[in-house]
Image (cartoon, rainbow, N blue to C red; front, side, top):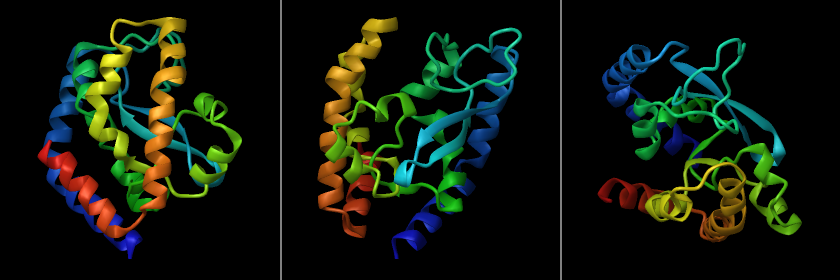
Length: 194
């Protein structure tokens, strides 16, 4: 039932967001050279590496063959900062939901470098379920931004691992314990009403 729910919601959203996605692509192309879509590597169910597409939110460095979202040292564009602030850069992830590798709601699909920071028992539990495009921590995105505001480089990485990641993992465990279609609907509704 959850798979059907995920597919229907993702398909409806893709159709509704398509005109806006075209506008986003135009703004990305106008602001800076480079591809509109870039690869985003995340860890999926059972630790499988997922290669997701997302809107480019950073400047492409000259000479780089492949742009990977979430790389250290990337310089966000103005359009990219806006896209990240509102989660728009991840709209193409809806395609991955349709493919069945992501769920609409689930524990956050995390960058590989952070999964190694999970305590082993938590890692086992979190990686046993399909990750989601949206999770409980999506409801607290403003708080996460506040915790990381003004930080760069190693200080940013350290703050993420020490302050944000434990919150996200606590939310992931809460979600896993309450995992149901009703929970998914409530999370989506809260996010829409926010």
